[in-house]
Each structure stands twice: as structure tokens, then as C-alpha cells.
Length: 263
Picture 1 (spheres, rainbow, N blue to C red):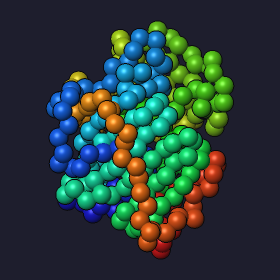
Picture 2 (picture 1 turned 180 degrees about the horizontal axis):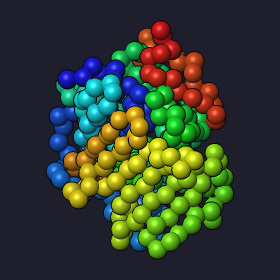
Picture 3 (picture 1 turned 60 degrees about the vertical axis):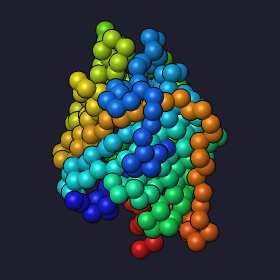
């Protein structure tokens, strides 16, 4: 089993609400597939059916740092607001997050640090994805493109469609492209100067697979259960002894690898 630090590079991108590692959620039940795309919903937008719901995921990682897994549960209050907690396989809380009214709070329980950010953030270990909005986390877990054309270039209407395939460019000129399969997003990729950087695909059984080309990193996750959100999500609290991370800069912020600030 890998050391937990080996997963630290992906933790911020994987922030989502959780039930405790061994908890059971009734509702859709084990083996539930990805969120169904409502006809007409862009592949980078969350389907309306996912708003006001909670989801439990199991994630596994394999890469140069080792391999391991986490349990993730996502509480979606709206298309932009979510609460999140991540636990390891033993039920220990690793990270918590809350995105509300444009501000996101990240809490690292291992190193007793917290960060407040506003606007897109670049993630340590995932810098080649560029700065992503907080909503990239639920979008990615629910099988959506983590960045939309309006967020990429500050305007809409810049998407090129060719049948089921689409593409657009971000501010850095990189090409995001993908393919829809009926009402589902089948795959997407990010290319920089023609070089593949990240690639995502949906498996036959609803599994998500994200690969970093060239670095040998691979993430797999499956939604285990989902149900309507019948009450307000639990708030993310900051214990009094936790220190604030100095790396959180509003708007054009960048989050360091979790724990680097305290070294």
C-alpha cells in the first residue's frame, strides 16, 4: 500500500463531499453509472438532475508515486456550490472542501492547514491542466469536461462541433476536444501544441479513467451510490489549531502541494 503522500498531488482536484469511508448510501445503489446527460446539456455543464444530490465514489490511483485508493462523497447544493470530504481506506479524514458564493475553503487534516481561494486555481502536480474553477471537481467526478469554453476564453460560442465531436481552445491556445455518445460524454482530451497531455474516457460499466500521457499517472473512479440531498450538507469546520496556508491567492491563485507550506 502506498504512502498517503503519494496521492497528495491530486487531492485538491479530487475534493468532494463524503460520507464516512465505510458508510452506505441508499438510493441508486451499488454499481450506479455516471450522471446521465440531459439532452441539450453541454458536456462541460452539470446535468440539472445532479443538483441537490449526494454521491459516493471509490477512487484508485497508479503512478510514479505508487498506488492506492480513497473514498469520496460529493454533496451538490447547486451547480456551483458543493461540500466535500475525502477519507482513506481506514476512514481517516484526509481533506475537506467547501465551495460557496465563489469562495472555496480547502482543509488539509493531515498537516493541519487550511486555504481560502477565490476563482480558478492551479493544482500542484496538475499544473499542465492549467487553472481550473472549483467546479472542476464535481464536473470531473460526474463525467463532465472540467473546463467549459466560456471559462476557457471568457466568452461563449467558441465551440466547434462536428457531429458528436466537439473542440475549443483555452487562453493558452491548447485544444480541448471530446465526443458524446447519445446522451453521455464518452471521452475528452487536452492537447498542447499537438501533444496529448490528459485523456479521459468512460468505461462500459460507468467507470471514469483519467490518464496523464507521458507521466504514467492514471486515476480510476466509480460512483457507488447516489441519493437526493434532503438536508443541508455538513459544514466544513476549521479546528482552532490549524494554520492558514499562505499560498492561497485570490483569483489568480495557486495551491502548493499539500503540506509544502509547512516545510
